[in-house]
Amino acid sequence: MSTKSAFELYCEQGLKEVCISATATSPEIDADGFDPYLHSIAPSRSSFPKGFLFGAASSAYQIEGAADVDGRKPSIWDTFAKEDSDKIKDHSTGDIAEDFYHRYKEDVALIKEIGLNSFRFSISWSRILPYGRISAGVNQEGVNFYNSLIDELVSNGIEPFITLFHWDLPQALEDEYGGFLNPRIVEDYREYVDFCFDKFGDRVKNWATINEPNYFSCFGYATGDTAPGRCSNYIGNCTAGNSATEPYIVIHNMILCHATAVKLYRQKYQATQEGTVGIVLTTFWKVPKFQTTASKKAASRSLDFTIGWILHPLTYADYPKSMRYLVGNRLPKFTRQQSKMVKGSIDFVGVNYYTARYVDDASTSGNLSYTTDSRVIYSG
Image (cartoon, rainbow, N blue to C red):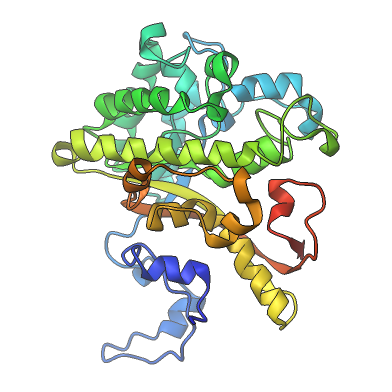
């Protein structure tokens, strides 16, 4: 029986090239006089390997503004920020934000000035395809904006990284069939990313299909704190939703969207564009609150329900066993063909890491919800 964490096992079996070791060992000064301890407390550019990229990241709704300018149509975040404004601390919206849409050249100059050499930004789906699909119309002004932004970055020696989906689904698709709750989203997403690969892929070599799908699903469909603001009645702050089923349906469809996009890029674009496609996940490291078997199992289970929820299918073609056991028939199943497509559908994994939390075992799950199914208690 392995004593390694779920995350360590994911790293070793299939993700060897993208994992970073965090193992602490006694530093030794090498033959060239390099002292790793000194560099660990006083890092500089020379502390990093050649080709290491220093960058900043953003999302369209949070920085672009110009919400109703030049043909852009609403996303679910435009709707949420106005109709569920009480869930936003200062009742702000993204209507203006940082006005990046109009001031991107100034921001690119600032990125260059502070010495960064990469920039990750997301495409506003409803800025280029206002109603979600090509047949409903392409907004050329939106396409022109992203082409100009990419050209500005490249001309300043800044490598562009594109996030294809950062939580701002076109409201038209949400209204038409429920967005990520409906498997129809997979084909619309495939068409959208195909359009992006075609229009921008000659200059963009780094693509992330989705940013933090696990948090999008949790906060949007289990707790109702973010768009589209859905959750069960017992949560008390949503008008519709099911916290026990919808988060799992959403992630299932998002995984299929991701795998479909990777398959498309590999078959149609990778040979000529020579880029890579991955996904960006988020996790808190989970530390057992007590040195007991129950706490240790809870920490491992918590990882399964966060980063493992996505990464395990992409590595092994199915969800973690702990999720299958605890969620039961509320957890969707992949068909044999889907499992084959999903497994190995990553060129890289991005990790947004924020902090760590203490975890202990919860004897019962209480109300059925994604947030309670893992049967853990968080603190710290």
